[in-house]
Length: 314
Image 1: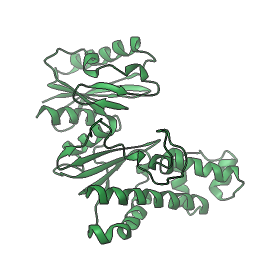
Image 2 (image 1 turned 180 degrees about the vertical axis):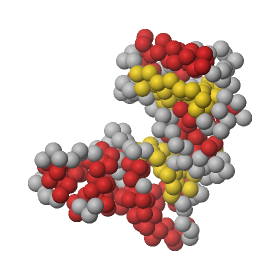
Image 3 (image 1 turned 30 degrees about the vertical axis):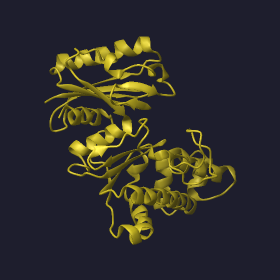
């Protein structure tokens, strides 16, 4: 069974035909237009090309940021560049015959769907997924079902509170996990060190323009023994661990899956996170919950979107 997976992003729309093994048979990427008048024909052109290159799909899965009603595919809230999709049903925009079912959800739940079908959550009934990137997203698998909640907000784990009086967050709150552990939060703390005149090999290189000012470079500097970079990474992982410990006690998962650009730090992130969680959770949980990186090797979101379609076609 071939399923069409579509990932709608602020800069690109990615689409692909995915087979039963999770392999992308053909894919197409187009720039995301600035308005609805350009969006629809661009999406239709990509789908038409895929249909000509492969075959008609049994169903369609769509991943999109924001709050998506999975029952109707209605885009209920989508701030930013794609705000013009608010109030529209994604199923109406795909343009395939009505007998081809279209399923949609937000990008984090779609990533979890991919892990359920082909990745680290395969055969698992309880799992957590955190997307650690510019922001922090999440999804929850509980007793074999992806949680969506009464208003579709369940799983927005980036907005659990870590510091009640912390930095303002994009959601309007303060001290959310996203505001203390995300690429932006980590880079902000490093920039504060630069601005305040602190000195270390990495900070000096940034100040002098010899190093790129990106989260991954901060992790690399920490591994190389840079004192300030190591301090920043240690502090931020300490806060992440506090949040994850709370999630562990609330959901008692079989596994925590991490994905996103910050998660690409690998063991530099995972080892201290596991160590912190061991002492934070040993009394109540009495076991070590595996923390792993996402196993679906697809940064496009297409495979996850197709997995959503496969799950709901069953």
